[in-house]
Length: 236
Image 1 (tube, rainbow, N blue to C red):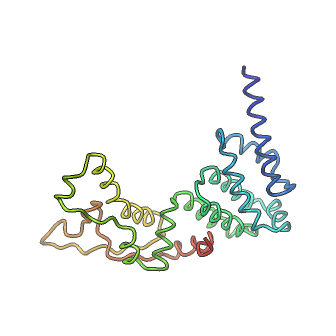
Image 2: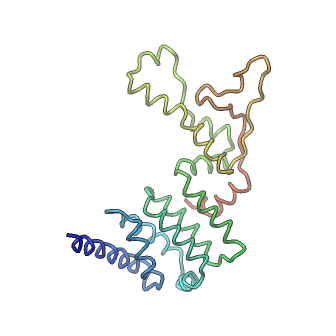
Image 3: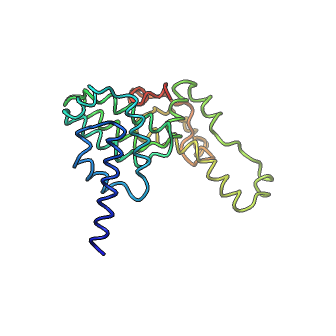
């Protein structure tokens, strides 16, 4: 039984490597190291996600860039990190973001490697909606973004008429936008200006939807701008 499982696993890894080569052509880095990576990271039927990502990457890489990638240990390390992310991608835009990012790492050197590594790690911690909101703040500023993504409040009477399931969904929607802003702030992608504290009213600065400090304004940091530039957000 154990030999049978090993054989199945090997076939799955071989298929993944063949798939990678089929998308990018005869690429040296699609050999043993990548096979080991795919075999340990990709569960069950997620090979199609790698194929979708590699298709986007192939659109962006010239043959000479693939050769550069194969001979650049820093770029290869970032490519490996990208493969870990690729198996979890759920959207076409996300494939484009990751492919755009990795294309810009082809000539990465020891000096720029560290910041690229950190930015790629930040990208992994963002949902597609996080990125969507970050892009919106960049283009429309915070107030317009808040109006677009915040959930409209309901009256007490309307709330009482909701079923338990509807109330639960509504409570999730209430915190949704604030939670995205909090995540962007945690990752140092935005600078948040909160409401000043009123000494005569302890909770005056608290957002009733989230229970967090109420946000008056929000702007991208240089890190946020750099991330959007690296993922080619304007092209997606």
